Structure formats: C-alpha cells, structure tokens
Image (cartoon, rainbow, N blue to C red; front, side):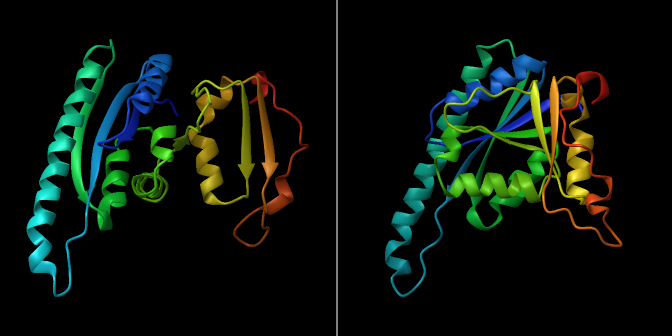
Length: 213
C-alpha cells in the first residue's frame, strides 16, 4: 500500500525532534502528516483524604490542559513554517482508554510513526504502541535513537510465521518491497496445521531481487 497519511503522537512536554522526523518522512514520500498532541490525566484521588486533595488535583489538571494547549499551538506554528500538508489535534485523556483513542485516530492514517523522544518515556509510549498495534489495524514504525528513518528502504527483512498477521503485513508493504534492492525472508516459528501452511512453502533463503519482489 502507498503511505498517503502518516500519523504521529506528541507529548505536551517533549521537544520537536520526533515531529521533525515525521515531517521529513512526509517530505520524502509526499504524504500528509496527522499529529495528535496528548496529555494523560492523573487519576483522581481516592480514600479518606480525597476531599482534602481534590482541589490540588483539579488545579493540576487545569495546568495540564493549559500546557497541552500551549504545546498544540507550538506544533501548529512549527508545521505552518514548512511546505507540508498537515493537521494538528489534541486530546486530554484518562489513562484507561488512551490506547483505544490513539488506535481509533491511527485507523485514518496509513502508518503510525513513533520517534525516539516518545520511546524514551513510559506511560505515553506504552499507550501509543498498544493503540497502534492492537486498535488500528495499520503498520507501526518505531524509530530508535540515532537511526535515519526512511519509508523507501533498500534492504527489507520479512519475519514470516504463516499467520494472518504476517500475510497482511506483507500485502500492505508491497509498494515498499517493490522499491527495495533486497528482500530477505526469515521463518519465525512457523506452525503447520489444518489452518496454517508452516514450512510447506518455505523458499530458499536468498535475497529477492527488485525485479522479482
């Protein structure tokens, strides 16, 4: 499939490096960038002291919302300075359903990109990865620190286990595979039974040239 829309998630207190990486990927393939700026709300106080601390909790939530608005405006301003098709939205979410909200947003894009700044965190990172993997049905690209991401790779590795997920992943990456110089296939615990083919179709483990990918 062709990547026409790239989706990425930003935290309210991070820098712009992840945003710039996602924007550069959009420039590379001429895609639209959809940005969701998220703050995860602190859980409400419980127990016998809840009434005492509730005012402080409400003030903390208000501060989070103000920070979210400020960060969303800054992201919009940065993207406005680039010749790039983009949209920016924000959500202030309870932790319990943040992954589902992220996954629902990701369904409207072709791929979700997670940069190294977000990966360095914990709570939001886990919500974005869970939402992207289990609630979107779309590919997820993780960019570790120090890497140079591309959506036009020259060497691709396919991990195949004869299950539905592998088949769908290969089908949706055909455009990427066609542009690669080498495609390598690795069998990962393939199971042969009445529902899956296992190793019965295992090819010779040689690189696939561009002409036959």
